[in-house]
Image (cartoon, rainbow, N blue to C red):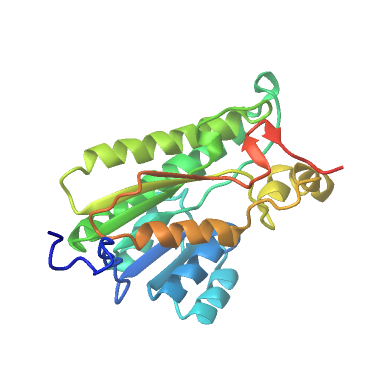
Length: 265
């Protein structure tokens, strides 16, 4: 006999999603791209969103748009991150999104400073915000850390040594954190997008060369958008509290792997 709460058609009852009511979500790197799209989506989901980034004018405008709060924060600066955590106070969801890439040089020609910057913002930046906000996440009784990684955190490619090394570090951080938080009321999810077309990522990588940035997406009819990735974040953080999506890899249909992309003539 089916349990009493099983519908008459025999299907399993739908479990409730995590309620965002009065829950605070902090999104780093919220001034553009995936971070801005995630802030908009979580606000639409009902979260009290804190937008954290360096560019004050951008996050204040977006915070006003979505009814959130803007907190200036540089994830590469210990004091800045600590000040952000104090200002935020309560926190149930952290989307450690701030990151970036610079350069496409072969390893033997690589700039040590470029590699240092990528490691600092992608790995140590995530580490800083996790450390500072973890007490609040635990105290929430149902915390969630979402680490924005990349398919570059799992597969390397020519010219991407510095970025893939950094994103492999981000992946290692997420997977280790998942193990170390076992038994605590904090979920850990890694989201690993493939080819995402945003207004700044590739342009920054090619040091402002818009032509070189455009070639990355040349012939690709539909790369992912920032909204596609924000949709993944929304889905992950609204699962029932006992469900932990450890890893979500998302790529456009045209991208089978880092080095296998279908391009139209």
